[in-house]
Amino acid sequence: MERFTEELVARTKRFSDEVDTLTFTFPGYVYNPLSYAWEMHAAYLCRFVHERVHVFFLGMNPGPFGMAQTGIPFGEVGAVRDWMQLSHPIGKPLQEHPARPVRGLAIGRSEVSGKRLWSLMARRFGSPERFFATHAVMNYCPLVFIDEGKTGKNVIPEKLPKQERAALEACCDRYLDDVVALVRPSHLVGIGRYAERKLHGTVDRLGMPTTVTSIIHPSPGNPQANAGWDEAVIAHLEERRIW
Image 1 (cartoon, rainbow, N blue to C red):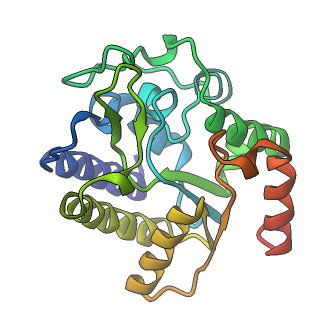
Image 2 (spheres, rainbow, N blue to C red):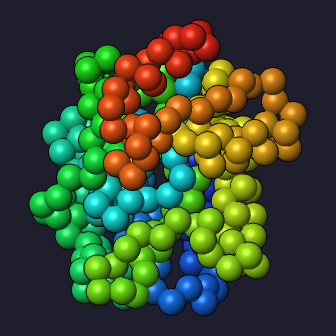
């Protein structure tokens, strides 16, 4: 394993341990896929995250049917299993919401955000090796927050109590700074405005000249993403001369 990958894997494992020490009064369930799906995530880092890439994409946090199941950012099962061809053991969080069990690649549901993202990359670049040679995709926060209601709704980190959110974001900021400093990308692209703000913070703290922009988040909960998402993303990145 080359030095870059060793440092990235070690820093990510430390990040997972750090977020596990945080305390939340959130009335629900907290999943950390970097812990129970570590083998899968480590394999993703080793195979698909490289230094000096052209574009570094950043998402917000795992979706319940994506990274929560597979340990891969925007980890829609079909993309992980069939396109990336990753398959490693996935465990369980300490406590599961009855409506949101972790079943790994056997979940039987597709995450729309991940399907949109990876389908675009597969169509444009063909193989994952070609895409990841010049691109990286990571998440800002590794934790999944699921409310205690019967259906187990996904809760974004921004909804946490202020003090707890600040402690989590401080931990995530340190990790993001370290990863961007390791990867040294030419362009930083937030998948959604929240991720873009976090990337601006990293650039300011590191004093990097790297350009920062964002694309529309592919979530079906975002009305802008439900018609022509692919075309809008391509047009924006081409306009910014990133693609």
